[in-house]
Image (cartoon, rainbow, N blue to C red; front, side, top):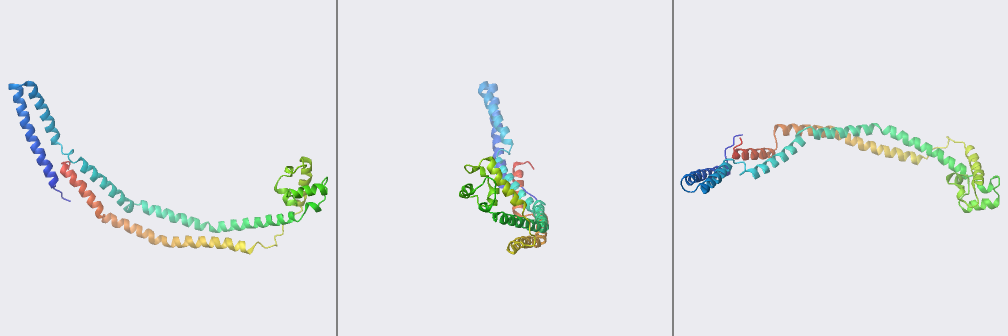
Length: 266
């Protein structure tokens, strides 16, 4: 890339030449005034003309705004180019697909955990049904007669399951002693529970879990099937951009170089 001074650069140089010539003339006049006419005003003219002349020699000030704009444009295009031609985009997508592959491999364990939780729920449901079948009104509990049973019923305590869910001491007239008697009865009912594994788990609930896992598996596999093509495309695009930078990057670089040529820095 071969660049020459632009018309703007040539004009700046012409203006600099005029300023320098005018400054030299002013300095000569000032020296004459200093030595022959008026020393103070002559010295002031020499100092002022010298300052202006020295400043005009540096073209950086004339192109400071253009240089800042060109530098900003170049940095923006360079970052955009690196984002596509560099490894960051490829590595980000590769890491994403590795995460999808890991999630896919964990699906069997997730399914087993959900089915196990469903079995645990089956045990809980059998336990709840067992305890709900033992009604307080039919139970023989020390110190708990028909009147107190009616009081318990009025507060929602009708079976052994209810007793296990919340404290009886909230019921008026049931202090710690009576509450312990009722709780002891409920505990004895709980100890009599026998889990029947032969009762099948809800088939609909099992199918729901399998459908959920199957849906996730299909989504992961569809995404993983896209991975080779996308990663290959990203790699090809990066190689292409390295060999053939986009025109925007080239234009931004040429603009920056042109301003530097006009400034005289290169």
